[in-house]
Amino acid sequence: MSPTSPQDRLFGLWRRLAPLPGGRRLFSWILGWIIPYSGTIGARVRLLEPGHCILLLRDRRGVRNHLRSIHAVAITNAGELASGLAMTTALPPGTRAIVTQLATEYVKKARGVIVVECRVKDPPRPAAPMDVLVESTLTDSAGDIVARVQAKWLVAPPEGKAHAEPRK
Image: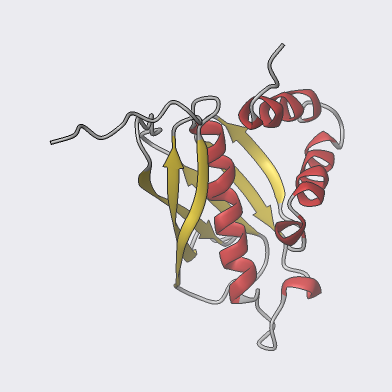
């Protein structure tokens, strides 16, 4: 029996835990344990489906800066995490992806609970390594955009499945 893909394991855990009381919180904690750096911001997964993720980032002392707003790097971290969850769940089993570039546009100070949303509209089905640009949007409780995070992902087909370039 072959091991399950990261996509299958991620969705399996989400499907088991999300409907339970405290299940989304437990899923978010486990995710933070698996990805320790991203776990430092304490984001909570609210929705996870193929190619779509919504996180909540609470305004708390651990993510604040000296201006009493959420730190720029916490904002970028949350946007990258949402893009990673959306990208991972959009990919065919065995497909590999890694972030190669991040860009964050800070629109206004982030205060209060921030909603982080990312959608992968056209899931890549790579025959060869390719770059895919994904954007996460971060909004405050008034619905105002506080930041946009663009992540460039290098997406590759499962090992041994890449098509060779034709020789000339």
